Length: 121
Image 1 (spheres, rainbow, N blue to C red):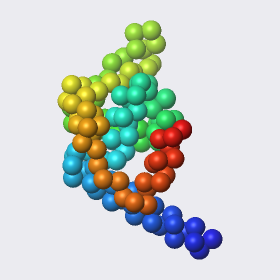
Image 2: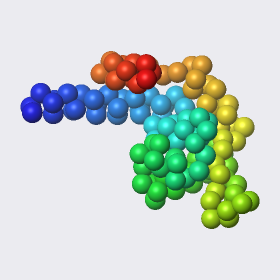
Image 3: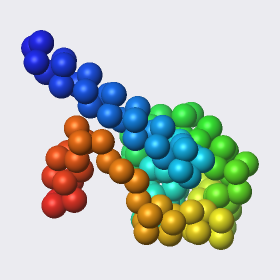
């Protein structure tokens, strides 16, 4: 168990380093980046986003509001079911996503193998 806890500590430290790099480079948090990527990938409704990104609905609501304040995301009420809102990147959000895809970010070594396994799926 000790080895697993030490490995988790290294992963958590690497995630913190990754978040700091994303914040410094793109001026958004890791969670905001994940939500933007999920929206760009076609996951547009809050329920689907919460499930895809692994956030509670209330946490997701705060992230969406923050992205909206930053001008990176816009929301539109669903015409067929007015209880639902569709989220999509604004032009600034699309530009940021393109920049993130082309420029990327250095991934800490402890996370590289985890990410490589996911990319193969």
